[in-house]
Image 1 (cartoon, one colour):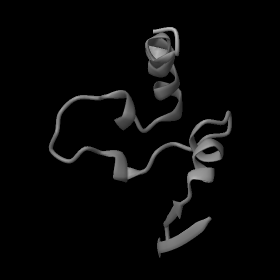
Image 2: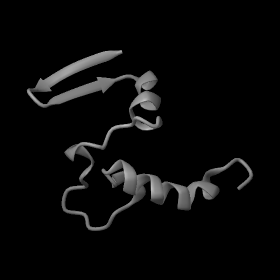
Image 3: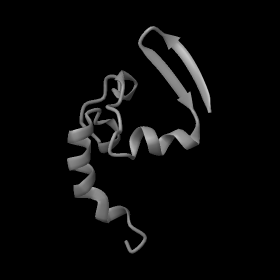
Length: 69
């Protein structure tokens, strides 16, 4: 796993193995400002930064991304 320190409040983890512990676990973190899509309007699932709001929206869409569909 590559850890890149970018500033006093920023840490970049460049590792496929880190995806699950950081984003897919019950102790996942909120997403950083890096997920703000610039000047684009809207709130696609990928860009929702808050863990709780993302979980609600993800549950709504979960059935669309199963092998059966």
